[in-house]
Image (cartoon, rainbow, N blue to C red):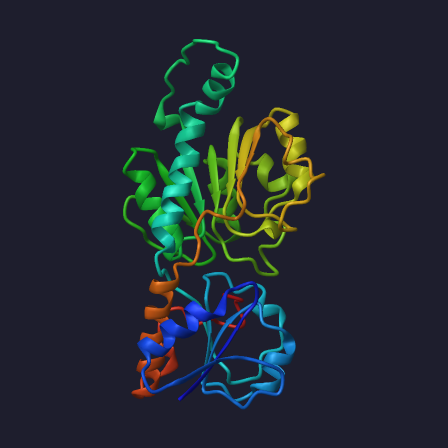
Length: 309
């Protein structure tokens, strides 16, 4: 069994060693132009040439949950793409979002600013009932985030493209449901995949539908958010601020206004990092399942090219 590794901006050796250990007897090598055809591929932001030269793969396994970069490539018909369906990322995402929500709700950002100038003060406690948190996207990550937020007694709403039922979450779906979802949300968490339908979905019109004083947390993709619209709504007073982990251009350019805005918190795309050991174990198990005759549709994380995720 031949496995090729084509992952941009990733140190290959630890991954190669891990797959060789998990799949003894397999040949695992870094892809190079003109390489021999492989049975399976492990990828992250591969060039178009990679798929042009590998038209008969039994599976291409993405070492992340987001596949928007892959969906921009011409993938040969019949080559299935499989994304990570958790691999240690959901708990990280839950940690990050809960921290951002609680930091805003408890006004720790204001305390930090006042402590910096030696000011001792108290803020009036706020009611969780008045801070419904809306989670856009109810996949594996979104459901884990929603469950974690519920542990802190925040009302939790969820929106997805198609109807879903999630315990202790008020669920909305579709275009009509999206409008109602936004109108009931005070803290918005974006966790939807980036597709042609969701690009620029966080714009002046949609964000203006949120409850007055709403707060935005984007941990999905920078392409979801119209930067200037967010700043305008914060400066105009409709939004109280934002925590942003993803951006249209990464690293975020030094001159970008997000860096200096007093009501925007920036982090360097670190909300949920790929965990190598967990990812190798998950991908190796899926490859073994296919080798043993399991149908590709039986695997978790198989991407629907029509949906883009």
